[in-house]
Amino acid sequence: MQRLCVLTCVCLGLLLALPLGLSAKGTRPGCNHSVVTFDVQDAVYGTYPYMIIFNGDVVGAYYPADGIAHGFLRDHNGNIRTFDAPNAGGSEGTVPFVMNDLGIVAGYYTDSDDHAHGFIRDRRGNFTNVDVPGATDTAIYDINLAGMTAGVYYDADGVGHMFVRTPFGRFTSFDVASGSLSWFNCAASCLNNFGVLTGIYSDAGGLYHSFLRAPSGHYVTFDPPNAVQSYGVGINDAGEVTGYFSDAAGTEHGFIRRLNGNFVKFDVTVPDVAGTEPGDINVYGVVSGQYFDSQGVYHGFLRQTNGRITTFDIPGAGTDSGTGTFPFTLNSSDTITGNYCDANTCHGFIWK
Image (cartoon, rainbow, N blue to C red; front, top):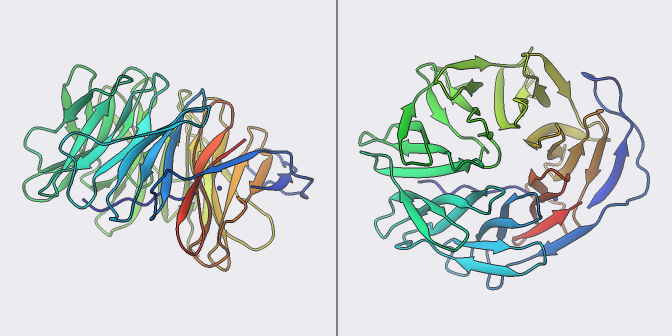
C-alpha cells in the first residue's frame, strides 16, 4: 500500500459573498478565530490529524524517528493517547483515518509482510480486524454513525476495487463504470449516515470523474459543467457533495453538487490564487478546504452556506512551494482540523 500523506491550516479574513454560483469576493477584516497547534510526543516526521468529531475530539497518525506510523487520539481537553493495531508493523504501521461521533475509529495497518489490513477500534480500545475475503490488502477510509465502513482492497492480480461493509460484517465489492477506482483524499466524509457514498474513478484515458453510490448499489457518475476531470471528496447527510474540478486550462475550481444534481461553482478569490480544492462538507453545507497560490504555497479556507469565505494560515506554516496550511476535515460547529507544514515537518492544528 502506498503511504497517504495528509494536507493541513490561522486567519487572513472574510470574503463578502456574491449570489450562489458565483465566486466570493471582498476584503479581509481583522482575525477573530482561535487556533490551537499541537504535536504528538516523539513525532519527528509529522503529526497528521485526519478527523474531528462534533465534541472536538481528533484522531490521526504521527511519525516518529523510524518513519512508521502510529495512531493518536486527542480529546477536546487536549489530552493525547497513542495506540497501535495488534500485529501492526511493516513499513507503514497504524494509520487511523476516520472516527464517527460515537468515538469509533477506523483505518488500516500493515503487518510484518507489508500487507494492509483494515481495522475498527471501539471506545474501549478493542480492535476488530477487517479483511475483504480473498484480498491481499484492505484499507478502510470511512465509517458512519451506524458502523458501516467503506474502503479499497486489492485482489490477487493487484487490481483495486471498492467495498462497503455492514456493521455485521457483510461485504459488498463494487467497481464504477468499468473504471479503475480510487479514494482520492477521501478519508473524511465520503460515506454519509444514510449509506450514500461519493468518490472518484479513472476512465480508460486516465482521467478522473466523480460518482455517487446509493445503499442499493445503484450509482451515478458526474462532472461539473466545463470539467475535464473532477474529484468528489465529501458528502453530508443532505446528499450534498463537495469537491473540485479542473477545466481545459488545468485550473482547479471548487464545487458543491446539490441533491437535485445542480452545481454551485466557487473559487477563493484573494490575490494570487492559482487553484481551489475543497476537502470536506458538514451537515449544514459549510465547506472547508485549501487553495494554493502561484508559488505553490497552500492556505486554508472555510466557506459558509451563503457563499462567504474565510481564508487563513496557521502561524509557523511554511512559505515555500509544497508547504503551508492544509485543512482536512471540519465538524458540525465549523471547527477544522488538519496540519501545517514548514520546511522540516508537519504539525497538527485545530482552527475555529
